[in-house]
Length: 66
Image (tube, rainbow, N blue to C red; front, side, top):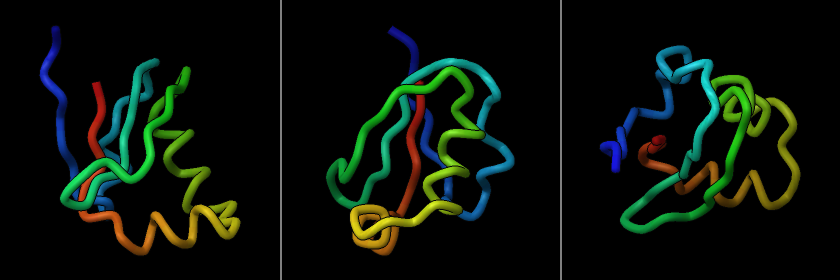
């Protein structure tokens, strides 16, 4: 299994443009998703904020991906 990489939420541009699984984390996982392009999908969470996104994005300390 590959290593689960962690990244500061302010560095979305460093996320890969590849398929994979990503997670928004605080001390525990707040949200997990899968994407064809991880960078674009994570960016979409920050651009199209609904109620759910507002809550978990406010708590996010890191973004993990594999």
